[in-house]
Image (cartoon, rainbow, N blue to C red; front, side, top):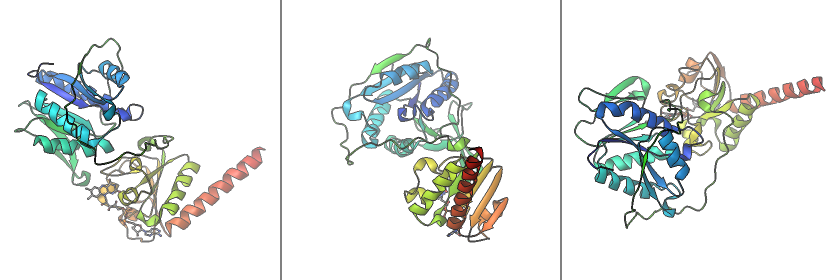
Length: 339
Ligand SMILES: Cc1cc2nc3c(=O)[nH]c(=O)nc-3n(C[C@H](O)[C@H](O)[C@H](O)COP(=O)(O)OP(=O)(O)OC[C@H]3O[C@@H](n4cnc5c(N)ncnc54)[C@H](O)[C@@H]3O)c2cc1C
């Protein structure tokens, strides 16, 4: 690959290939931006046995794929990947690097930006090339109350992260051609300070939280992991999904994928149950498309209660338990009737 041709890089977050397809969405956006810069679109893949991904990226619009392949890169390692990305960016000088705002991308992108001494805009909802040929990075700010337009005019690369689902991917096209460039590994890759003992895939969600028609969301008011678990049962009985606030995710009662809010997912359910949630702007910014909200809180003055269509002043655990009991009885009586 010529080091003088302008290029837009997309970091290949292929853990999400079967899930949110953010890499493919970023390749599509990079293809949108490329003509204005006369740039080529390049996917950057680190890993081991990545052939099928490389082919997939070409079929989704990557004109070049830079591949660093080694057994030591099989699993995501923020330290190794940062060292590699920094070295490649210094060698090849891309104009733009786009990274998915996944849990890994959020950890990885700021480290790369810091090492390269450049800016980074997180969670962009729009990307354009302005009249000066700079990347206009459009991102929500102040809990979604403002939309900021951010430029990085003096430093390169221009870096942005984008949440899964923000852009549409280009349909898979086997006729597309791309060049694959295999990179030699630097002699010294960073040694991980973390020792990975095992990998375990979390159970797949039945449906995407962002698309669920019923969402049962819980906050710190649920009081403990075992009590929070009851919300999963309630969501299942309602054929819905479970969401959580940040303190809940930090406490490990729910996984990162359940986070609803500025740092997590936007949801648009027909019915949202909100248990023991105060209603901080960083959480409620993601609820503006919810049709009907039922909030349960001990405090009638909580913001969440004011936002709700139905506000129940009660203990969240008791209401949750009563709903589960009532729904189970209903299901049982229905099946007894049909027997
Ligand atoms: C940059 C930034 C980004 C952030 N991003 C997010 C985000 O994406 N998502 C997010 O959720 N937060 C986010 N936060 C955190 C946010 O500001 C709040 O701290 C968080 O949403 C509060 O969570 P909570 O409502 O569960 O907890 P709390 O604010 O502690 O509220 C607990 C509620 O439970 C009620 N309660 C207590 N006991 C009971 C009971 N037995 N029964 C019923 N009710 C009870 C209380 O009255 C209270 O209203 C972010 C913060 C920052 C600074």
